[in-house]
Amino acid sequence: MTNGVFTATNSDTHTAIGSATVKWNNNIQNGTIKVTDESSGNSQTFTLNTQTITEAYSANNISIPCGVTGYVTFEVRIRRADNSGSLPQGVIVGSKNFTLPSGWSYVSNTYTGDGTEFGVDYQKYQVTLNASAASGIGYFRSALSCSSDPNSTGILGSTSVPFNINRTAGSLSFSSTPQQIGPYYLNCTSGSSQLFTASSIPGNTYIWTVVSGNLLIEGQTSYTSFVGASANVTAYGDGTFKVVGQASGCGNVQTDPIYGSIHVGPPVITNLTINSQPQSSFSGGMCTGQGLYIESSSIAASSFSWAITSGNAGNAYLTDYTNGNASFNTYNADCYGLNLTVSNSCGMTQTGFSVCADNCFSAYRIYPNPASDVISIEFDETNEAEQLPDKIELFSEESTRPLKSVNIQEIYQQKSFKGRSVEIQVKELSRGTYYLHVNNSRRKKKEVDSIRIILQ
Image 1 (tube, rainbow, N blue to C red):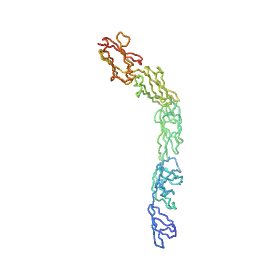
Image 2: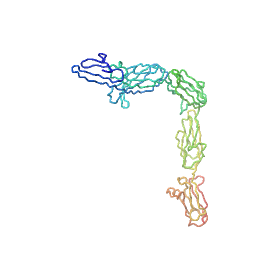
Image 3: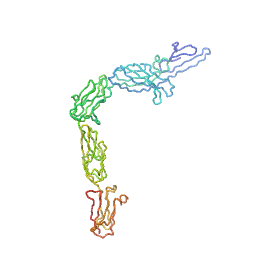
């Protein structure tokens, strides 16, 4: 035979009746066995085709906090080279499967069961290593299970799978804090202290630092906690602090910082916009039926409430979205007061503004004047019924009853404007002085416009 030996003779030749056991060499090469029948001299040669095992490693980047010492465990998955299951299954036979970073050493492995991933069967092993402070790249190779003695054959027929071992300071978070509203921790009384606790990571110290505002941490602007991960923060006003975990065992590598922002007292309303415009730019007026959308921004508010505080609330519509935003509308000309109240467990804050609603009728022009045959009334806008008058009537100088009447709302419904105009025929009327009345029943302060017309 080539690339191996017969176990009975520990050589590449063997004479036997029936069967023989072979052991292949530990390298990725094809091997052959030639069998000869001594009585006839006939021979036949068999070839061993080595197979490559594909490993699926579940965690090619392993992060281990620096404070972790002693044994660490992780999972290795080994899958077959094809989906049919016809190729030999890889196994872990011991330390020879691993090349590890400096200071790390193999301890043991335990088979934990089978699984399937993306249609491929695999076996799971829990591998235990003895940890070192060093980070680095390791390599894993599986052994073929086709040998009767895998421990003696060593590593056969697999591809090296690299994996990174990163010693880190861990991931930090707050595990215990005072009451939080949004991104803010609430402190009702200036000068009072509150206890903050960060998550505990073995081997870490904790560096607490004031970032902004009027805060003190354990009476200082910077405080290092060597035992435990807690500190008292005293707030004399709004402010922000940060916490960093530092692992001395790995060259003082640090965690990403976590931040705490503290608000002292009742909430603060920071901004108010009306129809997307700042409150300072709001004219204080609106047209009936067009409505307002109001948005607010605040700090440390847990509840929000809008209310109509003046004007006839029964003629208005206020929708409170309970998040500081609201919409307001009315179809009645009037002035209204709108008020926002925000609160938290420390108290409440209010703000508000006034708005006067008008019917905002479309501007119009009357021509010609003097007239002879036709009087034309042209409107700037005819898209909204609320912007148009109800009707237009023509009176003689002595009459109290209209001689001509045009229902503008009916023309709007029938869409029978001539462009944006309506016409009144006056050819048959006597020449003289007349008055055109434009009736706006929805206008509170002035219901009728009276325009003097001369017919000649």
